[in-house]
Amino acid sequence: MSEDEPTKRRVLVQGLSTLYYEAGQGPVVLLLPGIASDARDWFPVMDELALTHRAVALSLPGLGGTSPQPDVRPVAVASFVAEFLTVLDVDSVIAVGHSYGGLVVAELALGHPHMVSRLVLINACGLGRAVNPAAIALALLPERAADLASAFVSLPGGAIALTISSQLLLRQPWRVPPQTWAAQFRLARSRQSLRTSLKVFRECGDITGQRDSIMVSDRLDEIDVPALVVWGASDMLFPLWQGRAAARRLPDGRFALLPGAGHVSHLDSHEEFMDALSSFVRDDRHGTAPTTSTGGRP
Image (cartoon, rainbow, N blue to C red; front, side, top):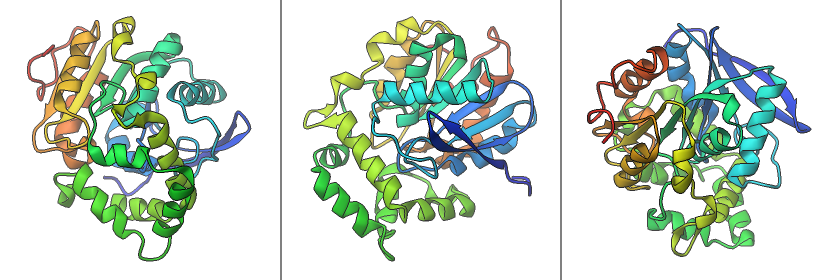
């Protein structure tokens, strides 16, 4: 990674102070993190994309420095993202999202198709009911209990919860850059980010798994732009078959499997992830499938 970090900026979006980072010039690649994650997690990706593109990493409302908004439904957050792009005077983006961010960019492509020229879903939620029981437990946590848990975890020493959660989300934590771990520990001390994350869990899950109300799997055939689904082979949060099925449903979809990676596959296997993303972002739409793919459409 270069010594120059992406530039930190703020704008007002729907009245909310909104934090984002950007680097490079050219066609815009929009990067959305998942919950309990940070826009700074994208810095290694931005460093490489900035050679040919303008990479923009957005902090979603209530997470990592952007003011919270009451409505955390994916469709509402997608509308917020669309307004953010309007504020930046950006007409169209290559939209990249991880986990909950993946669900948001899928809703962006569905609700604002003119704004998305290509779509990348990384271990995205909303592609099937199945989910790890730990996520169900967090979804069932009452609001008052969630607030108490957020207060406890944000106390000094409470960041041990990050260490525990990393066992579920990462399979190769030693490959994660120290700067990223530092950003994660700072995020773990933010009570607002923790409260928002738990609120998203409640919105997206119930006792049976992921809620029907957030599913986009049955609407993927409406997305006619080139799309890439990236999945860590050892994702313990969402099963691998959800990613494969999503790639098959997308009219112009392809699939990239990252062996050895977990749920946060772009951190677990950065080099392999960039091999898949770079060719998809930089090649023309008739180019060859990513080399990490199982062979085009699965």
